[in-house]
Image (tube, rainbow, N blue to C red; front, side, top):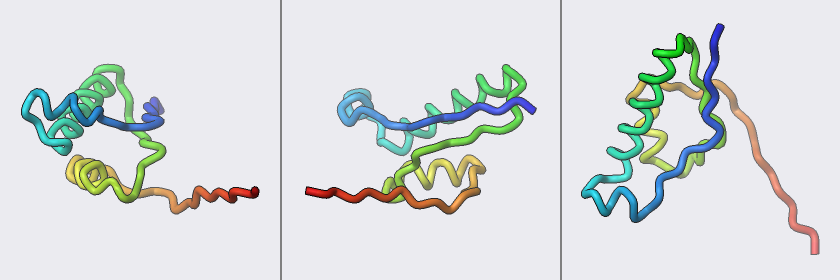
Length: 81
């Protein structure tokens, strides 16, 4: 089974604004293009890592495109001075 993995997704703040797009529409266009290219390469599964749960635009776009949460994990950090 062919799998594509997206390690991180980010959009430059000024980039989408300069062309009159919203962050959500820019993310949607990026993900639709990635999905098209993945299909062309016979990918059956796309995994997206490092999603910031507070990035509502990204989470909503992924949900609209049929992505679903498949892991529940914590990323934890301790700063020791």
